[in-house]
Length: 219
Image 1 (spheres, helix red, strand yellow):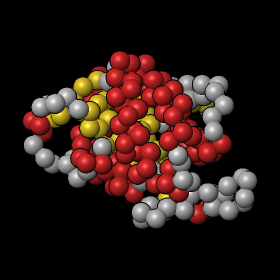
Image 2 (cartoon, one colour):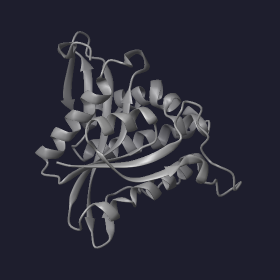
Image 3 (cartoon, rainbow, N blue to C red):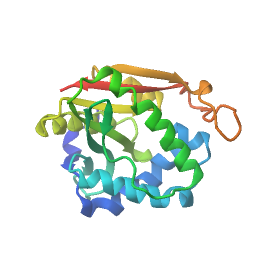
Image 4 (cartoon, rainbow, N blue to C red):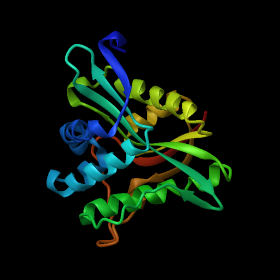
């Protein structure tokens, strides 16, 4: 990891909304394997990025990382809080907005993966979910994804959550979670998940990602 003194970890707040949306547009939009697989464009996800980011910020569970010298946000973990209760996940994942078809398809897939929590987390347990882990492309390979994840684990502890969880759709983030002793609760090969419109595999990734994994860790 690069000298950690060059970066500052903060709890992300609603006033950071547009800086964080800009960060997603500069890297996550184009580098996240599922986004690339369905050729997601900026105008298709602009509203969703704003709304989903604000939702995570309002939960007061998200993390951002800044450069110390100029204050630039270079990485983030956008998190939300939830509870497993009576066979359901009590997290406000739906905001009632009718997004672009591609966004809805991706959300349906993530929700499908997220349901695996019901099989691995005891009833009544609270959790912090890492919804989006993003690093600016100019700051890859500096340990910032790990830094944001470790800060999220500490935030889960501070908030008295029993678990921290994530749906990981990039083989690099999957490897990171495994290094940090997350367990795998559900795995699905991407070639087996079919597009309801075409009955063909929805996500064919060219970066080495072959599956999606649901990770969880007791805190």
